[in-house]
Length: 414
Image (cartoon, rainbow, N blue to C red; front, side, top):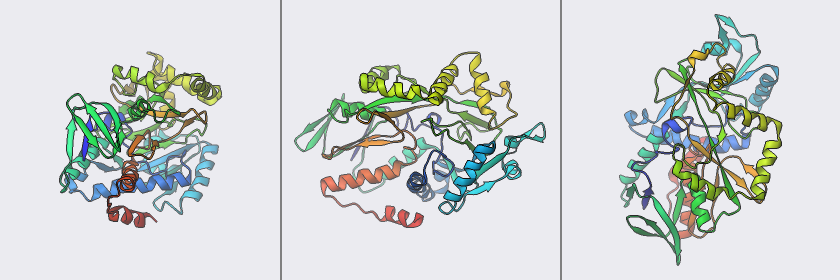
């Protein structure tokens, strides 16, 4: 096997700790997840935890972290929604608790208290208090490499080798970099929005276009003990604001993300503008999908607000209003723009169905090549995605795959 990576180290783009929310998504506090989706994502999330727990403690503790987490309902409508969700999810998520205002204050006092008094709104939270909830995906990726290279298989790690072309050669594929050419019987492309770019250049997946969404964050002093999410607006295809401990910045809380379309496949890499234009494939169909989104008032207002988040002077004041839904005592001087923090989500547009695809996607023409495009929760589901990749490799090559580890995981969560 060979892993071919364009940069000089692994996980330096979207898996880098500063470029994502550092969250193990289980579907329990993500209110835009149906029960069906939550159970599917949870299986993959538990794979991550199980993998990390099998590592030596010193290594494990650099990968996964325990923090309390909750989704906060503010006001009668959101509180009733969470109560109903609790009844649906509780039988499947044994660790889930329904908290009232006093119980929230015991765990996250800054969410409830303002000048020593309780905030006036009705509050309810769905909480999970004693699980691994945060993860350094960059360190996790490095651990995967280390584990693979201790096996009895030949695993070549080719860092700093940007792939130039992938071409079919008979039943195989020729992968060309500036330094060498490799011949492979099966190729898996897991490169964010660039996965779609490589697919398009091979005439595959042309029914998809890419809309990269960038997220920004703000730091405050540590005002939260754990992760506090807010109820998702089901009309918005983007994450609602949340506050998290930042595992790379002790004694700070990170709030965000904002969400804004950005014409780059990689954040802070202007060279990917040309790549973006290639995968956007702007035409009447794509324009129509974008216009249909813009016509929805909630989405339109959300776009305008996120544009304003990028404007000097007003940006911090506007963001403060959103952050105060979680911590009402926050002041303007508490907010510090998280410079260089935030990544890009490669959201796909289905040109055939004329709609934005929420979540991850894979393109598999069934002939020995597979393209993974993984916006959130693609990091959480990385081992689940790997399992599917291996099953397709096994099917295509007729090789053996020991599923003992994966099957044990299935039993554990059934």
